Image 1 (cartoon, one colour):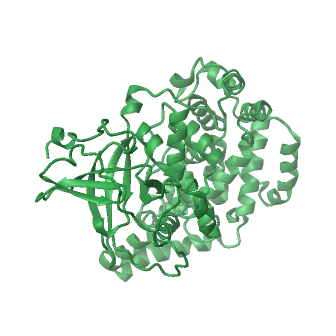
Image 2 (image 1 turned 45 degrees about the vertical axis):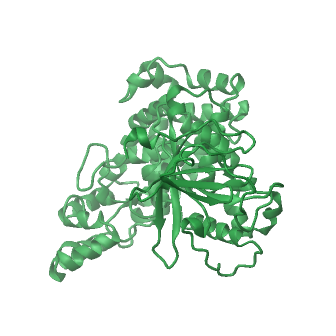
Image 3 (image 1 turned 180 degrees about the horizontal axis):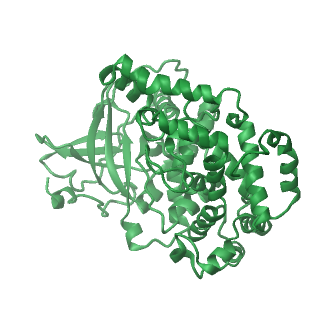
Length: 522
């Protein structure tokens, strides 16, 4: 269908106000039918204002139904409003330099009575819906499911259809994407929308739980509800949330572009497998593809998780417990200045990203008015200041951490041996960069048993033998040594304040450092 015909019936505004119908939306009809049961859906694009006006949170479900949720379901439907307002709205949607995108919301259009009670089925209407296009077109089929109406061209193979619902008869419950919806609503409520923002379209998938649109209504296992629709909604809601797995800690560190310590950790690593770069650790020597912190065996001499913990301890940034409290924000500012010397970097404009932050206000002069005058929460470093912080880390800390691995004899010798046996830029590095399924495929389709033994098993045996009973490859020892070395050198250069915290660290690591006092190149 041509674009002008597709949009011909969209957003009709001439409906009788007594019915409170939503604007008619063009939708794509689909069916998910991988099991014995078919789940039809309608995919639409809604404006921000339409999302704010027409879609509801599960916590807004009629109150008489709230007691019928299990503990697991109650937990999953709970909205974490501080996370919505601070993490998603302020630190994501309102960051102008940040590309933002949400995937589709899933919304169930559920029947409700005149008193707001959730009905057990879609009741036939006692009135005829307004005869607006395309519902008054003879060449269109019309399907009524209670207060929901669907229209589509008769004898057409197109999956383009049209959807609207009476908001007095239908509750649009968002069963997947509640935090995203809450954030979008809060964004609309706290923003003066620009033209581009008003034109933004949010993908939404609608479910209508009725056989008239092709929905199979099977018995729900363990159903004890007197409302079969509620049982289906709860089942779909729990399944959608249960199958959304949390990102692993290592992957979060490698992907998070808001967490300063994660960004600094990535700046310690080469950007590609099987390469070596100045002041960056080869990926073949760092366990980056799972959450294991141990490296006393295997091909690695450290892990992403350990490096992240070390950096977090070194920087010791006091993120605000209350991002709108002046005292907490001031402690945050001071902790950043103490460890990363941000004012100096901004004033001198030194570093890779200097063009972005050179000449900016000091962090204190920027943040405090935001909190005190604008009542804008400060939870993480604003964009320009985070770039200055990364530049400071790269200048003051990265050479020290890299220097331990490149210069301290156990790590240097392991690095050289790994390069010799292919663990840095050879076959072993390639094998270790693959996912478990890709490794299995490689074994069965490309490498023979002899090749696997030569390229992987024997080199790993050599590396394991080298590590045997060496303290340098113990997690606790490495963390203590890295922290004490960086603090000692930074203090000697006047970059790190001599505090009670640093003296405590010195005392704690004294025992661990005895065996390596004579280590060279430290």
